[in-house]
Length: 371
Image 1 (cartoon, rainbow, N blue to C red):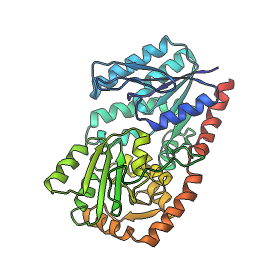
Image 2: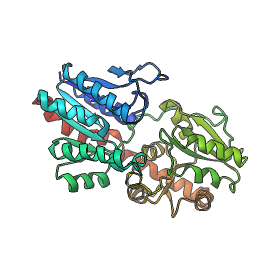
Image 3: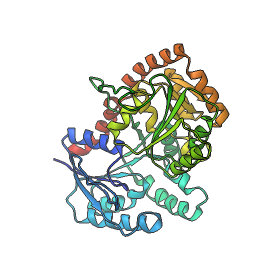
Image 4: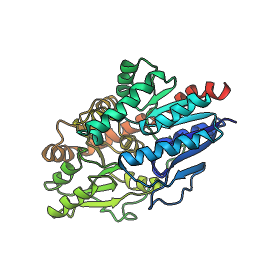
């Protein structure tokens, strides 16, 4: 049985992609250990795999990443492991060094275009450090995965290595989960429910414009479920505008979140093309909306446009502004359009699901399990 160390920089609680990859590796016969960090407010890990979580003296910034990478290096140096999986650039350096030093197999799973992330915009020194790490290691990698073709094409062009695409899509359930009623969730029975969900509701992801759009919308409720650096700003803005039709529910466990998703009428994803990482993004929430059977309203970004146009799942806003968002939401209330889009989600989810994407995981890791 191959021993697999899966490295992340989070606290193991809300990373659905990593959970699904680990599930596939376990089904293939791997012994998975998740390695991450523990924050002061992190609940105990209760997942199905062995877990190691470091308590670090810093929680963000350069000192956090330095501490994390040192701890990962020494953990991997003295731990029995056959395959190392580095999730994102912030765990790649120790994984690469140990893989070379101990002659272990390494898989790099890039969840985003890390060096063009919003958090690095205007931070030239930090960006240059990550770029140097990427430029040194990436051309030497043999097994690389990322989340969509746009990012994969850039990496292939820059570093001339094969890059596989595994989209972060949900599992297709054999039997649909029992749907909650709006009454159970304390939601109005006849109003249009618009949903924004996400673990990283950050600046430039359209949250503020979405809130402001609800000044001019009637018979509509906006639910904001998740967390992020713009979450509190959106709450303040809704309060300033006196919007009683905007509700903030915070971060919820995935199963609880999907109870709300399943009763919504429109799911939104409104990243703005102000950072290349956002421009190329294919957010997880899009696939959650599809699997819940609800139409989507998205910004005009290449990967989002591709999916929404191909399956005809909803509307694309020409610009992320309160006026355009409100106009599209009003148009999306049309019952005939709602019916068509909901029917189309059925075809989409039968093609866009983890059972299909995991075939790529099996293709990549299969030879590593036998070598």
